[in-house]
Amino acid sequence: MPKPKVLIVDDEASMRHMLSLLLKKEGYGVDEAKEGAEALEKLAGEEFDFILCDIRMPKMDGMDFLRRAVEMRLPSTIIMMSAYGTIDTAVEAMKLGAYDYISKPFKTDEVLLTLRKAEERERLIRENISLKKQYHFENIVAKSKEMHEIFETIKKISKYKTTVLITGESGTGKELVARAIHFNSPRADKPFVTINCGAIPENLLESELFGHRKGSFTGAVQSKRGLFEEADEGSIFLDEIGELPLQLQVKLMRVLQEGEIRRVGDTEPIMVDVRIIAATIKDLEREVEGGNFRDDLLYRLNVLNIRIPPLRERKEDIPLLIEHFIGKHNQTLSKRIEGIDPEAMELLLDCEWRGNVRELENVIERAMVLTDEERRIQAKYFALSPGPESEGFRSLSLSGDGLSIKKGSRELEIELIKKALQRTKGNRTQAARLLEISCRALIYKIKDYGI
Ligand SMILES: Nc1ncnc2c1ncn2[C@@H]1O[C@H](COP(=O)(O)OP(=O)(O)OP(=O)(O)O)[C@@H](O)[C@H]1O
Ligand SMILES: [Mg+2]
Image (cartoon, rainbow, N blue to C red; front, side, top):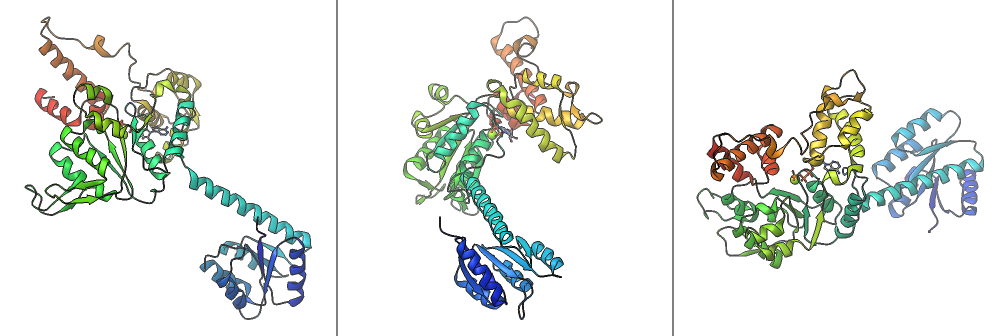
């Protein structure tokens, strides 16, 4: 380790001399300045770890020096030396950005101790910065082995441009994981562009993704960059990739193979450097078997697969998630709820959680809204979705006793769609997810069945 360097700024020659001897003996590299201006000159050409600066000096005094040093954003830790009667000023100096002060006259130990303390703090800050620089998953809460394995995977892969396919049920945290991959990658300060392939009408999707040339179709009054261009040098998150129409799957293949896109109505290829992260709740292998998904695209995307297990397979995450959501919504709701009743916790641990973490968060948020007097969340405030026993076919009553599959499945669909819409409070995108159909298909059915 290189020895730390200290700049001593004091108008008194004897003081400079004494400190210089002391610090050299302790292994510091030392330089001196007689006054503020001289110190600033030295600092312009050289970096010091520490500056020991007297407050009372002729011409530029210590405070002026400090202000200038702070303005210059020096990396040095500044420690002020205050003589009798300048303690107040020393305190003010700390507010301005000095790290500490020593009052004169001081014992040599005091100087060394203050420097050591400052060094230790510097070390901690540096460590912290490098930890943060390495990886941050603050907003993904998890205790389970499965989730920690996912963190490890993210750490390993984020620095490469490898395409990642994230699979998992609705609400398991696919988007969070996608973000973690991007923001822990060297592309972090470049764009992270998201598109939900199931939420955009098929005829607009291509132009959305790849852009279009002016006049290439009715309504294309101006040329437009697509999301791939927007994401250049960054990442694009293709959510609900299973909804991508076959014709566009072919075009996506080309991007993956050749790293170039073509705007709608344009023949000129445009080179893009984009990392692709895709997510789906669908079983794409099955989609391939059913002819809805190209197998070559699946292999291309599936270079690396992250499967996020459903919440019911990692129940040990539940208590931590609850704590996290209580903290989060204490803020959003301005509440001061302290925790959850053991009985209520038990109930939540027993749930199926078909809506996974998102559903858990909704349940907690709702209960928090209703919790008033009590400081802890009570079970009576839960509106849990029924478990598997009370759901599904048993609770669906088919009218009449005809055996027409056509009619029966129509009724079944209507019932399921209504339930899904109820559960998502009318949110069609979410309802479509629960129903495991595309948003487009849902909207069509809603119209068709007059729901
Ligand atoms: N491990 C976790 N820690 C904290 N919050 C989480 C975690 N997992 C999910 N969440 C929260 O749950 C919600 C759903 O997460 P996210 O949108 O990433 O899921 P998803 O898998 O993309 O869902 P969908 O398939 O419905 O799009 C978000 O509000 C997210 O912040
Ligand atoms: Mg999502």
